Image (cartoon, rainbow, N blue to C red; front, side, top):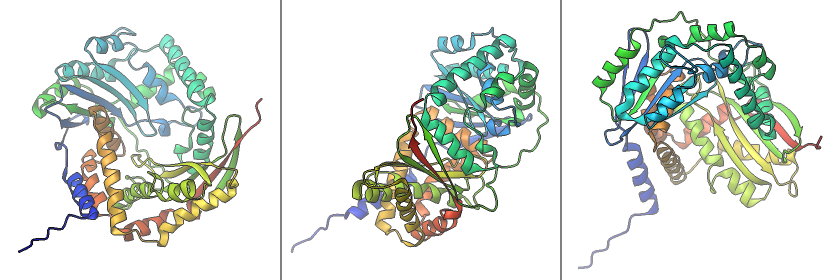
Amino acid sequence: MTVSLSAPSLADDVSAALASLTSASPSPLQHFTLENGLSVYLRQQSRNALAAVQLWYNVGTRHEPAGQTNLSHLLEHVIFEGSRKLEPGQYAKVVARLAGQANASTHLDATSFDMLLPASRLPVALELLADAMTTATFGLPELARGAKAIADERRLKVDAQPVQQAYDRHLALAHGSSPYATPSFGSPVDLQNIDLPTLRQWYITHYRPNNATLVVVGNVELETLKQQVERYFAHVERGQLTDSPFPRSDAPLAERSQTVSLPGLSHGLLMSFNVPSCATAINALTSKTLELICEVLAEGSSAWLYAELVRGRGLLTGVAATYDLLVRGDTVITFSAYVNTLNATLEQAADAIYKQIARLHTEALSDEQLQRIKLRLLARQLFSLDSPIAQASQIGAMAATGQPATLIDEHARLISIIDSAQVQQVARTYLGRERLTTTSLLPGAQA
C-alpha cells in the first residue's frame, strides 16, 4: 500500500504563522488608580533586569492658546532643572549614576518623561518623578536656557530641513481649524515671549496626578509597585482640570491643494486624507483597518503603490505611508512620494497615486493576499516592541488618547478578523477626494 502525504501549502503556512502571532501575547497589562487620580499601568517582565518608567501628562501642543505655542515643549526642558530634592543640573547625573538613561518628548496631546534603569532602582525613579511633579523650582535662568535649547533644536530640525518645513505647511492645510495644524515647533516669536509667570501657571495647572499616567514595564511585582507609587505620589493633591474637546476635522470637508517651493526640496507629493484616530473612530475595527490599508498600499515591495508606480511604471522613485492613530482627535493618513519627473509630472503622479488608492473602494483582496499582509504587519509591530521602552511608549500613548491602555492588547485580534469587505467599506468612507489634501513639492532657487 502506498501512502501519499501532501506537503502543507504556502497559504497554510501563512495562516499558521498568523495564528501564532495572533495568539502570542505579552503578560497581562495591569492597572490601578490612586485616590488623587494618578493612573498606573504595569507590564511585568520577569526576565528583564531593566525597567522602563514613563510619566505621561495629558498636556501637549494642541492645548496651547493662540500666541502661546511652545509652552509644553519649554516646560519639558525645564521641569527637572531644580526641585526640593535636586539642584539644577543634577537630575541627569543622578539617573546616570543609577546606570540609567533619561529622555523626554512633547507630543500633540501629551508630554512624556521616561527613564530606563535597573528594576532594583525603580523607587529612586519614582521619587524623582514625584518630586518634579510637586516642587519644581525653575526660574528665569532655566527658562532662558530652555528657550535657547528649543531654538537650537528648531534650527537643526526645521530651519535646516526643507522637507520638515513643507510637511508642517502640508499638515496646516490638511488639519484646517484643528489645533493639530500647529507647526511641530510652534512659533519662534511665541517662544521668545513666554514669561516665567505664564510658564509656572502652565506647570501648576497641568502637572497634576489626575492629569497623568505612570507606566512601568519590567521585572516588578504589582503589589510592590502599588506600595512604592503610594509612598511617593499619594500625597500630591488633585488639580482642577477643564474639559478639552477632541480635535475634529473641519466640516464639511473639501479637497484642498497647494504648492510649496523651497531650496533643497526634491520633486514630490504629500497626499493626506482626514480620517479618525483610534479615539474618534466609530469602533476599534475602523482604525485597525486604516492601519492595514497603509500596509496594503505602501509597505514593502508588493504594496500596490510601490509595485505599480515605482517598480512597474517608474512614475515614482519612492513612496511611504504614515497613520498616527494614537491621538485624541481626528488625524490623517499621509502618503509621501518622490516623483520621477522623467516619466511623469507632479499632477500625473498625484492622479496615478489616487487611482491606486481608489482601487480599494471596489477591488477585493484575496484571502491569501490579506493573510500575508496581516502577517507582515503583525510581525513588524511585534519586533518593534522588543524593548521595554517601546512597550511603555505604546502604553502611554494609548492612555493619552483618553482610552484604557489595555486596548492595545486587542490589536492582534482585531487585525486578524478584518476581511476584504471591511477594507473596501473603510476605504470608500475615508479615502475619497473630499477628504484629500495634496501638497506638490518643488525645488526652489537658492537664495
